[in-house]
Image (cartoon, rainbow over all chains, first blue to last red; front, side, top):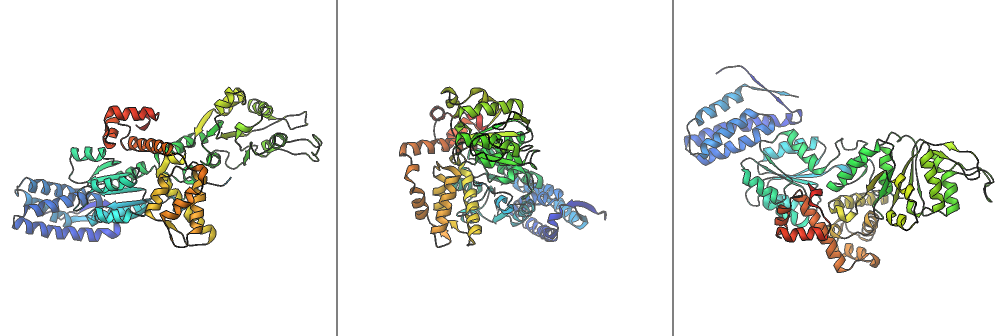
Length: 101
Length: 453
């Protein structure tokens, strides 16, 4: 994993919401891993769907893309590639650096 | 004349937006954006919670998620449109396909947006469907002076803004009580003449001799009683705007004189042999059918065409029902402020009754009814029974059932056409009529679907 930071510009109006938002996404990583371990496709689909809706809204478009990919795979009944998507999300959360504008 | 529309009052222009989503994080982010953009936001985590919160209040717009447990977005919209068919509803969804979007549009949604939603997209859509002034609330611009949320009024405002900048002569028509002088004043305020005087005169309220002297001025001794020189309103309005209300009542002899002023930009006071130049913009208005008066020879055709370079019609209150709740709440607030009392509100059924009333006296009548209700009601909530008795105490203004039905039918058709953006097949579907029948109804009411596209 590269230690390089991923800089994301976020609307200043949302500044106070961002720590809670990122914290919730870290919880999502755990929930996704747990759902994957138990092959709970509905949970994977639901978290992916909500991630897709909420990520871009807050300005984290990559999270939306990851959410959409997880939702699609779970909807199709596949788990192939989901572990990589989840670890990609965890990596993104570790490296993201928010700049408020 | 009383101001029918509030001027420069920030709170009156803060639209209430109801946002519904079962994902509280999305709710929070949308709420932040809308609040920062100057809107008053109410949030709900479900359709039923939203329905409860909306009942009894008058939101300007609703944004709802499509898929939610219990009452979904379409069901919420459908319930809301039963009592307020004009309420703009924006549907938001993260998993909808084209059929959902088509269904939502057919059911009357203002817009269908997909998640993730961007701030700019959301705010632009909200403004578009509210036709909210582009300036910040409280900013002094033309539309901030007039309370409205209807498309019809938004179009009038756009036209008024366009013509305000020029010097063209404007002829305002509209039924009594629609606020012709308020518009004239707003046009003046939005024009380069705003720092010069705005002078209004009701041509129908002043006797002929006096009107001539009032308008053009007179010399000392010009007639018996003219003990001093009088400059007249053209002189007083120099550089600014002169509003000639009820111009249709101006006597023919004065019409000639006014025509001369409009042609030569010169005024000659009564009893004077000299004219002096004036730079006055003329806005005139009438609630009468001037064309009819022209045909009868009671109004000069040449003057009429000079006056109505830009004709400007103000719709009746019954044509813009969706503005009524905003106006009612504004007048309730104003009553409370003027009388140092707690602000009262109408019960939901009373509000609905008032919204669907015909209002032949337009906003002037609305103000009277609101003021009487606010005065007579001891409690904070004004019940339907009081609203009904106050409104019906004016027997001259009650129409026959046939007239009322026809009026309702026309307003209903207008509402449906607006919802369907002038698409007849969709409008007919909403009205549960076949296309042929629907076209027949449109013809009966002289409605052209193209006007709603």
